[in-house]
Amino acid sequence: MDNIQLIILDAQKEIEQVSSKAVLTQIRARYLGKQSPFNSLLSQLKSLPNQQKAEFGKKLNLAKVELNRIFDEKFNFLTDLEIQKKIEEEKIDISLPGYKLERGSKHPCQLIIDQIEDFFLQRGYIVKQGSDVELEKFNFEFLNIPKDHPSRDMQDTFYISDDLLLRSQTSGMQAHTMQEKNGIGPIKMICPGKTYRRDDDRTHSHQFSQCEGLVISEDCNLACLMETLTEFLQFIFGKNRQVRFRPSYFPFTEPSIEADVSCFECNGKGCDLCKHTGWIEVLGAGMVHPNVLRLNGFDSNKYQGFAFGVGIERLAMLKYGVDDIRKFFNNDIAFLKQFSKEN
Ligand code: DAH
Image (cartoon, rainbow, N blue to C red; front, side):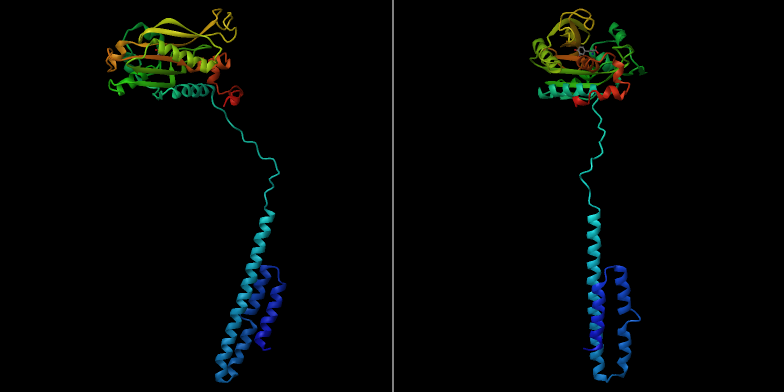
């Protein structure tokens, strides 16, 4: 066995025993660095006869290449071991209980809006979105409420300028929708949104939400409106609620009606909640006034329509038994949390 082979054998023995990359690097430096035993063999090269020189040089180089390969192999092996160990140590213990995620819940008014949309989308209505800031014309004039009409008193609101205000009702969306359609029906839409009035007590607030509904076609009539509203109110409050209609007045509908549901508390017998009438008023509605059709570009001889407007907080107060409208705006977590099971 020549010296070169002996060096490789020695190195192999050391490499086999080593189990740390740092020590392996030191050994490698010893065998292949400046002080390497191969270098001292190289100095013998000069004294060899010419024809053996090339052969010896070649052997020496091959030996170095081989040794490098052995070192690399062991280095990679030790790296793999390290990774393996790390993976084992880092194992996630899935038996630990997780952290509980705090989950919010939908606001009760949003729950009611979702239910309203559910009901009307199934019946082919579209949902429109208006803006809180409205032109005075759309809030009043296009709805057959000219300037100085006494009904404006009940809907005094916040004016931004003489002709711009915070809308006091979602009914303005009737006018917008009709004008967009350029006199061509049919229309079936609802529009939930915020409204504002000069009001403040347990059941009225300066800010509240309504949902408007409008249907325009050549053949809809009061019976369609009453059927739609009866089904709608029973969808919201349950099949056991009875629904009744009373004549009423709104400038934009003729005839106008109001809908009541039988009292939840006393089931119609009479109690404080229903002011001993057995009924609770829930919404206003009617057949679209021919003036409103004409003012918004529809031929009142060809088309007729019905409309309704319902207070969202009012529905929520009745459905969930809330006694003060201000609770919807106070952001009291204890109050809001009670609705999480409804989500
Ligand atoms: N806008 C009315 C209000 O705020 C509610 C209403 C009544 C809307 C009758 C309608 C309707 O569309 O036909 O009191």
